Length: 391
Ligand code: PLP
Image 1 (tube, rainbow, N blue to C red):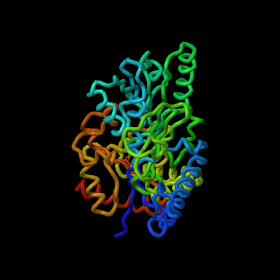
Image 2: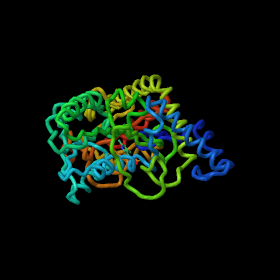
Image 3: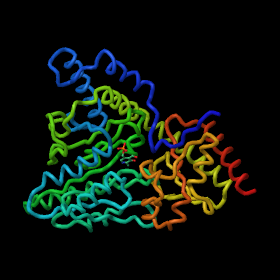
Image 4: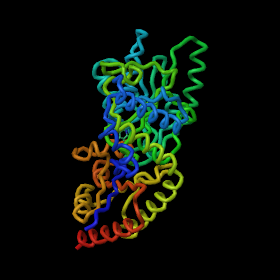
């Protein structure tokens, strides 16, 4: 039985070109970029070239790209790093949303639990989209950081990042006149990178997270874009790597692979966007024909072209996931980080779904390699499963 993978929001397979670019750095070019000898210089050159290639794709400067071990770590560096760097005697205030990834929410909660910050969690009732007015309305005198993700990993909704960025820039202009501290704006663009140009300057963001394994690069590598205006302190201590912001010997093979994956994603966005959306819509229409009661969470555009989050009334997502898996189709009930938890998705609850509806959801997420044949085969499997369940 040929397996069909429809869980690209959880992770993606390594692109062959990425794998090939990485190979020499596991084998003969294994040096530590910190070493002075030729092997070390070779590794340093690979690191510099990778940083340069990524910075070009983001229309940024090489020194604005800080490599980290995961998007979770990069998000921690953005939030904890800003909070650590600010010491004006007032308790700092952070604005975020109720539908962020756990790496944002748990970091904010941890800082709150240690009484280090106060946090406003903006709601998204109904449509999964954060309102610019709500962000502006939540700003207080002690607000130092706003962290809003670019695209949601469970329901695919896309947030008005450029509009929020412009609003924050206006607030900062007014603060500058009054001699007040500026507000930093961070976005977690992990799910968006594959499909959209996330150039930080275009979005007016100070800090931006993106990750290797969501774009057909390796796991264990991500980056935080940090513009030159941001004040940030490292959250781990050690050597001076990554401009002092992320000490630890650099993962050269992964960084080389990440750069290749970034270049491939940037050059295939337009085509991937259209193709994936067409296949996703074909899958949705096919499922809606098989199961008329199916509910799309959330139908609102703009949303990621690869995301389809559906509630199947009368069934649990887990039951359907296991049946699909037994037929060779891999999907998810929501975020991979929460997949093994019995708790309903915090994103679907924030949308206004009740626990039962939230627990009846399945997330299909398509990727660059998804084919028309895979979609047809998946629809056949879904039809077979519901025929069996209804008898
Ligand atoms: N942010 C978003 C939006 C994500 O979807 C994910 C992973 O699913 C992460 C952050 C964290 O990525 P990782 O688990 O690779 O650190």
